[in-house]
Length: 166
Image (cartoon, rainbow, N blue to C red; front, side):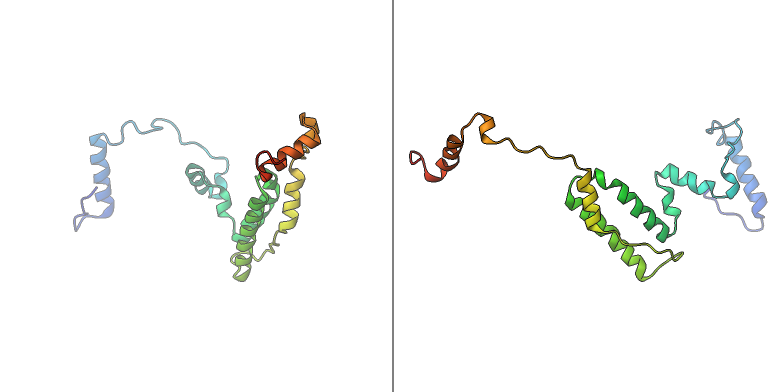
């Protein structure tokens, strides 16, 4: 279809000619879904089903369709739920700081519906994270490891004093 439409020919007749030539060449044979009815969509009544299908095919979330204020509120709620899965306190603080930065940026010049989005409290998120961590086992004392206190003391100080000075 690299040909240009000749002058004096209407678009409709030129397009019909192109389709007829493609049909004769067999360009429409063996297309996926040929001979089958088009699938009916239950959610097609709102006219936005094609957008959701495109996002699903691209592997994106439909959250991209939300206005920024609602998206930030949703991210805030998701972060509060996902804090227990993070590996370190630094990771929690970084995630909270990044989200708070984006919330503050949106507050300066709000776009979309003016919905209040509160900042997250980093200390509260860290305390939630700490509460979700399993309690650490106390270290075994030297006596329970088969060493007496005096041998543990000698072993600990011997390297400092040098060999034979214990």
